[in-house]
Image 1 (cartoon, rainbow, N blue to C red):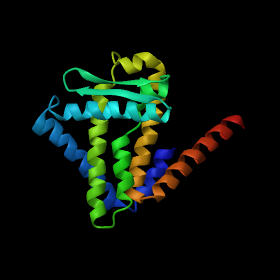
Image 2: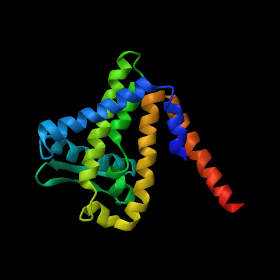
Image 3: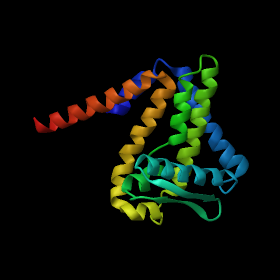
Length: 196
């Protein structure tokens, strides 16, 4: 239901939406046509994955001891403190780089904002294509939490994350309010519709 609300907000912002889409297509073309799946971009994808683990570990009051990222051997984050499902699953639902760039696009005036929106799309491609490679049954993070829970949680979490990044990119700072209102209203309607 929230997706339909978001689509209605896109209708008046075609240039922004086109910029976002062009950025995603550019990343896909560079990664798959020019560089290949196992290029040096894989190292950055692993690093981004591990930085999200580290960011959420810090948010959960853990201290980071070590971060490693390698194209060949993968990566890991070593931290002091109690690990939890949020830290383990973070890289699978938190598009940190796209969110940061989308928020930066709200601070830049037209016509330069279109370039930053395209950069947000590029980073969304970076995040979601690497997520496609990471999401498999042998992934140690998913095994720690349990694959069934991971699937049930991650599908709606990713939809909400994509909606948030898209709304911020297209509507600027107002995107936060549109996103929150769409999620809240539809959740409220769903809960009370089921109860009545």
